Image (cartoon, rainbow, N blue to C red; front, side, top):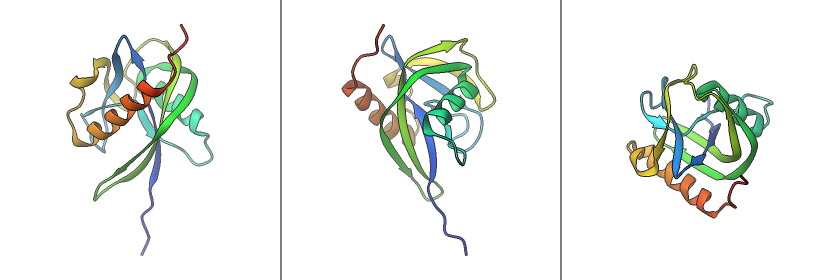
Length: 137
């Protein structure tokens, strides 16, 4: 019998003009729901590199100077994820949905809180962003 173990994912909490960058997930878990850009860390991959890769794969954007805000735990009957949440000083590139995303867009914080798992992740991300120093212009 194999013992399940937590999966490590990374997520980006990025604000622009009081809106947060979100993706509509194309694949399970939570397919078709809106989420922060996020994804699994591959074996041997640094967290910052995983974040940069996942954000680019999902949004077409490149993270400049990512920094860790905090860590979120997401546990259900089917899943156990440990999610380091990052922000970055800026994003560069053309906003385009990638292979894991149906859509990408900026939303007002209150508009994306729809799925139960997003309420906790978004609440924590917003609290962490409010405590972090402002991005340099």
